[in-house]
Amino acid sequence: MTHLTYKKYRPLYATIYLVIFLILATLIKLKSPLITNFDTTIQKLLLPITTPDMTALVDKITFLGGPEMSFIYCLLLCLIVYLLHDTSDALWALSTVVFCNLINWIVKNIVARTRPSDRLVEINGYSFPSGHTFGTALFVLLVFFLFLPHIQTKGLKTLLHIVGVLWIIIIALTRIYLHVHYPTDTIASIFLVGFLFECSLIITDAYQHQKKA
Picture 1 (cartoon, rainbow, N blue to C red):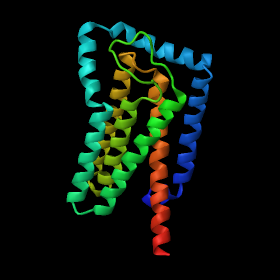
Picture 2: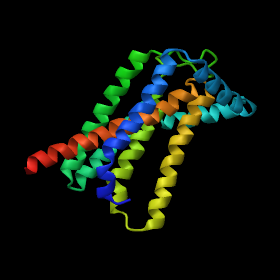
Picture 3: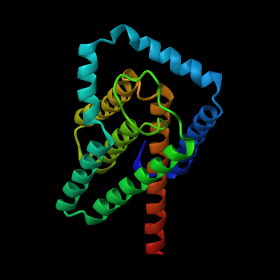
């Protein structure tokens, strides 16, 4: 898909992401058995590999994908883009990071889902959506959007896509493994950040179009 074709369908993608997220959020708020059964089934799949050594390792990995770390990664990314003399992209990325994290915080407090009671590490705050998964997905999307278009080698582009997606999945799984989030918390985070990212791009496109007019 070309950049122009993708740009044309941004509102459609944003709508799809939002609808899926709202369905999940509503079902969770209503404490739907469908959500409970799904979360329980996924959590049980990880029980056979739950050991003290594995927990210690997973706790270290999940730290690398924490909201604070992801925010630092994003700020460093903005700085790199700025130093490459692309001030507009750097400012867009910074505003997107602030905007997305603010909305995530608001949603977390509105839904106010209690964390799993059998968590393996102590943590405060609400469960939905997963801040770790959200921040990691946002960082990966920024890397994809800001750097991949400048890479000419198809193989390298594919590799970076795979690494980025795997990193999101790994962080999401660490949160589920540690029982600090339900599986649906992590899934919803990805759709929420997808919606907000598309919104940021749509708003920017509209502003640039108006500026040229």
